[in-house]
Amino acid sequence: MNANRVAIVSEGRSYSYAELDAASRRVAGALLSGRDDLGQARVAFLVRPGFEYVAVQRGIWRAGGVAVPLAASHPPPELAYVVRDAGAAVVAGEPATVSTLEPIAKAAGASFATTDRLLSHAAEPSLPHLGATRPAMIIYTSGTTARPKGVVTTHANIGAQIAALVEAWEWSPADRLLLALPLHHVHGIINGLGSALAVTATCEMLSSFDAAVVWNRFASGEVTVFTAVPTMYRRLISAWEAASAAEQQVWSEGARGLRLMMSGSAALPVQTLERWRDITGHTLLERYGMTEIGMALSNPLRGERRPGTVGMPLPGVEVRLVDESGVPVAPGGTGEVEVRGPGVFLEYWQRPDETRSAFRDGWFRTGDMAVVEHGSYRLLGRTAVDIIKTGGFKVSALEIEEVLREHPAIAECAVIGIADQEWGERVATALELASGETLSLDALQEWAKARLAPYKVPRALVTVNALPRNAMGKVVKPEVAALFRE
Ligand code: MCA
Ligand code: AMP
Image 1: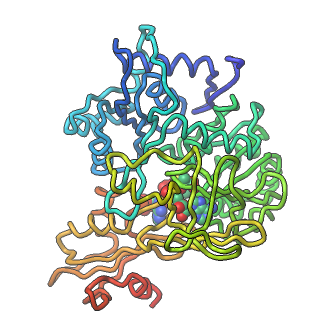
Image 2 (image 1 turned 90 degrees about the vertical axis):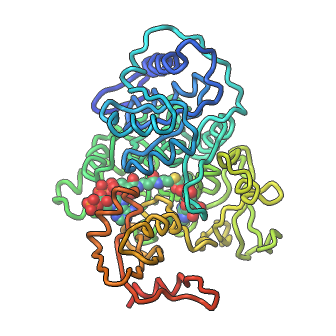
Image 3 (image 1 turned 180 degrees about the vertical axis):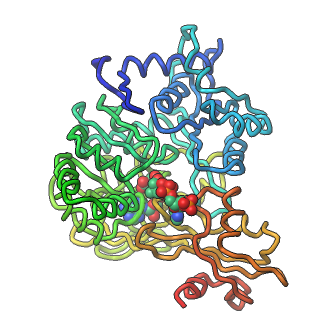
């Protein structure tokens, strides 16, 4: 490897692979502070996307720790939950996060370190040997349980997830990825950062997504690969439509020069795919994955990409469709997607029962329904109504309901996802209010923002005298959804 190659570009600076190696070594040394091995201690870290994020992530790995990325958009209660649930020994954050993170670390019995301190460590550490089967990362994902679960992946899992993408999408050292995704989820961490660095390509990182910035980077002619969620493509399309004719031309021309543009994390509306093709000439490569498995299905790099479908299994990944009792469906039949392969996660952190029930005969049960049409998988939705995908983020209706029930004016509530052009789904809630109470959407949002990540905050509200319930007293979610169509 040529150590002088550019690994990361962030905030207008380029960092070579040698600089990344040295910085991550310093971080590892600081975390070890004389020990031989962190021995899988969890290190939670809150660093904006950029060089320091990567140095800290890799420093944790090199010291033998388990990296637990935290999200900058999350309010303190959500950060505290992750730190506590992961049993973090250390919480690391940028200097600007001290006032938020130090008390959280303290309350959880963890030590706190600023990234400045980690990155300026001087002593040369001796680094532990890491077996591939050791846990490397915990990513929190919302599911059918109220609180998010930690998805544990090993170094081998991560390696396998990335290897499949490098092969299928022909990543090469000549690539330059433009990365505008958050780095507390698989899309940004594995498909983006991990793949680029695995082949010694360059990863250009934006600290947040801004449509005009992304367009201008396309126009530079330097970028070769881009991957994003459908909401980002919608925003890029809106920005293009609002731009001057001259800008449109420069942006479109720049975009045309990329080698690969991908979409995933949520269904890509065919309309978005078609509009993007009109504007850039690219047929977005849509693929399907999940935090627990990395990527499983992908449209081809070469060959026909079928709009509205997510393609075929990636190299090394086995995929099948089964009926309710786990029996594979006949060709052309509809079934639940099950996945097997070296990229599939180790376990839900400290949740053995949930880990067990997530598998059937060694296959991971995704909860997504699909059918194979003309040799390409088409997703048909999820088996669980309580999972919502908004802006590419997976959120649990049950988790939001639990938080909303703490509001003094709310007697009972039901949360659902309602279809939305821009966000895929938007979080909506129907409320039964306590007697004599009123509650506006603005007031509810203000209250919820302090407790929930922005993408979990309800964007629509109706109040009802009584939520629609079945004979057993259970809220009927499809009828709740109907309230928003009225
Ligand atoms: C933010 N807002 C929202 C949502 N998110 N409103 C409704 N629904 C939402 N989901 C609000 C903000 O609070 C703000 O409101 C206003 O929208 C504009 O905020 P802005 O900052 O412009 O938006 P944003 O916060 O930047 O969000 C847009 C985004 C973001 C950049 C598209 O959603 C995003 O980064 N999505 C990527 C998610 C992702 O990486 N998923 C991968 C999961 P106000 O102005 O009132 O405050 S991994 C995965 O799914 C698997 C493995 C896979 O297959 O990839
Ligand atoms: P997460 O658990 O946040 O990793 O989200 C994984 C879920 O996102 C999957 O179970 C799917 O429901 C959804 N998903 C990912 N990619 C796609 C796609 N291309 N089309 C439709 N849904 C997708």
